[in-house]
Amino acid sequence: MKLNRAPPAMHTGRVDNRPALPLLLTTCWLAMLFLLPFETMAQSESRQEEPSETSVKDLVNSLRAPDVQLLKLKENYNRALRENRDADAAAHLQQIGQLLFISAHYPQSLDYLLKAEKLLRTADQKQMLAGNLGLLGELYYRTRRPQLARKQYDEALGIYQTLKLESGKAEIYGRIGHLYEKRQLYDSAFYFQRKALTSYQLDHHIEGAAKIYENIGSIYEDLERYDSAFFYFNKAYTLNKQKGNARAQVEVVNNLGDVLRKTGRFREGLAYSFQTLELAKTNGERYQVSSAYNDIAKAYNLLNKNDSAVYYLTLSRNQLNDIYSEESNKQLALLQTLYEIEKKDNEIEKLTQARKTDTLISIATGVVIVLIILIAALIISRQRLKLKNEQKLRAQHKQVYETQNQLMEVELRNKNLEEDNLKQQLETKTQELSSYTLHVIRKNQLLEDLRAKLEMMVKDDKRDQRKQIKQLAEQISEGLQDDQHWEEFRGIFEQVHQSFFDRLQQQTGPLTANDLRLIALIKMNLTSTDIATLLGISQDSLRVIRHRLRKKLNLTAGDNLSAYIQSI
Image 1: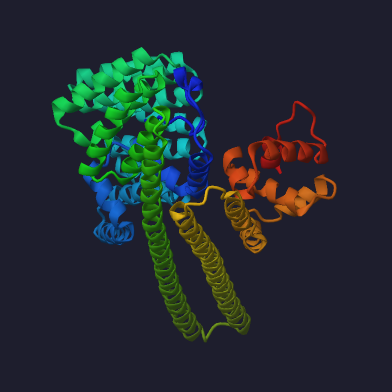
Image 2: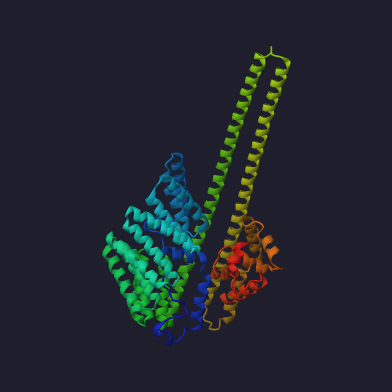
């Protein structure tokens, strides 16, 4: 469920008595943390909590070429929709949502999963609906909305209980237990993980039981009860070995090594780290390869073999740089594909609306012609009536004709308004895509330059590199300060949250540009860590800024800043 890692400068147990790393090694670790982008960390987390409905093979294939996979799934979805196969269409929507979820495109993933849910409810596909609810719950959890995640999990659990599917119940129990673990409610976490283990055992699902043993070991590790953690990790290792699940063993062996290192058994932990490295290389787990290099470097540092520590830390950093470059290209390709799909869908929608308009006009014209014929026949048949009746009939004919024309004009105006609205939405999405694409390119250029300089520094034998490292840190700060990008972001934000800043100014006094930027990020439900990263400041600085903002907004000690901003 999670990747257990200690921070680079912190250890437990006997580690506190060990000498600290040299300045160069510590600086390299800090540089690695700054170079690691948020999306890469999110994807690393998703590998540990990936939804069970998709096989490992499918996940690997989709991550190798997500843009190609997305186009294929979209084509299959359109074909199923044309053939009125709602269940298949929902399955393809779910797969698209899952692909976007793995690629950390959470808003787009939510859109497709909600569409799949609607189709599955209509088609009464209960088991598929439960799986989709599990994915939605995982997405809500990943986007820091645990209450919504729990709601999805509870509904999915009710369906699995009705269908008497033990493995489905076990999966949901495990995810609920993980929610409690993240909130540090360990008693509840243990309770649900053990319920999950019971259900997997009833269904004779060995791989699922192995994962739950790993989850329980993770809770014990959080509680620093390392003997129990090692016991449950070892049980997971035994079950995976029994099933020949080498890919799952990568994380389990890694956790065993972490426990040994945290309890001061550095050489034994190092052996497990090398075993993790070999398993990760064999199974093509590139992130785990980088993590194994990093763990080996930690172990060598604790053993006072800093030359080896620097060597393996450099390997870890190079591996991360390679992965980041590849993932950046994949992200750009996927964004381009999403844009093209949306553009094509908009064009199809416009053509559909145009056809509907032509059909309505044709029907209206036919109705008018029929009415004219009927009225003309009526006039001819009653020519011999009195002049008063003839005038009355003519007045009725004129009124009907004018009413039809007015209806046609109103309908045409409505269609024109809808078409203008679609054009405006397309322009907005185009601007948003261009902005973020340019931003990614600029960041890639900056990071590539930093990578090259760091490599030169590593090759250089000079010991005093404080000045060069300080310059690199300033470059990173400059990369994080991008006023032009903030203006583009503010324009897009005001389109989504119309008149938000106007309403804010009516309720408060004068606010600075930095205040407005912080308020906008809080309005988007970002965590404090994410906000600090985007603003290029520390957590302590963020707390000071939030405190000052509370004073400007005249909030009392009991008022919640985030809740207040969300209510505007």
